[in-house]
Length: 432
Image (cartoon, rainbow, N blue to C red; front, side, top):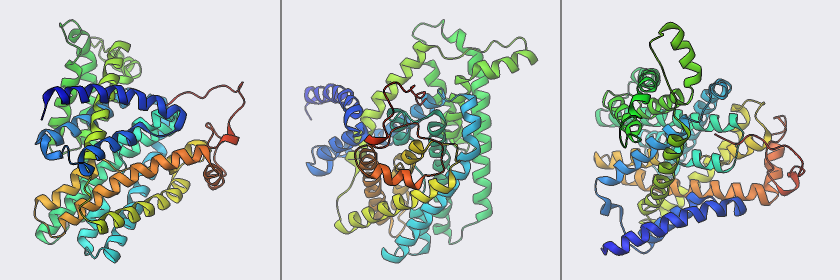
């Protein structure tokens, strides 16, 4: 491969990513979708590049992207918003995971003839939502703070559900039995212990940060600590994603927990990230997100039309189920416009793609079917999310969603042209 050509493409891709971001404000076509399309063109459509060309770097890159996105988003979650969001998030995340997994497993058992265990495995893999897709989209859509926080937390929680349950089912397929008590215990320990690791890490690093700033080129030491926290938590068998998210929340709320700690331990002097550091991490997230979604496009497989058709059908069922899930799982204090957006956002991404590869790697019968259906659902779920967002703004679909969410708080955002507020209306606070 011509090195100069690759470098030229990377530069053009970064400029294109900024252009796509500007397009979103006018067209409501998410930049992540256009980046996936570029990956599709380079990969499965023209075969110019394949995921194999990245070797073992590919999975590492996708994990690094997720770590940075969760950390950077956590720093923007404030305690007041978090308190409001937490009460409803766990209900929504649990309901969404359970219903989505049941819908997918039922369809796989009935129509794909995967059998009960493999059908449940596919349901668990596709039960969550992708933080790497949801977080950038919610920021671009300028959802209210509560709605954005709920989406952030829902995606992080559902990722843990998917990982723990899918791996438990995979182990059960190998030995012929699933111990559900172990599964529940694994979920609780993964949440609680990972959260403790993240909180302790935030306290430790916030007191060390002022000294790190004295180092030459010390800006990246925070990122290095994030990697250490994620890696150690994962090695110990808990959720690195939850630990990183809690760590980011802790660093973003030093003014709150710093006062409490200083009263008990006067020798502590915690500091929070400054604007320069926050801007630095935001730039890293932008670059990683750009290449991540191109890589997702490269990884999509079009080897079997039947798998693709089934993947599209399953995706449509997931989005139909998402509407009542949000209607009954969300607190009525969320504005109708935000609730409508949330009902249109259930994309799949990194966790689903990684988990779907495990049955094939471990030579489980039907593993290739699980992987290829999952890749198709990843593509179609992101595509349909983009289409629904566009239709909510431009067509009668906005009115349809508004009718569904009657009883919720007044709109904070226009979801169709006729809902736009007067020019003099005060602006809602932007999403974190």
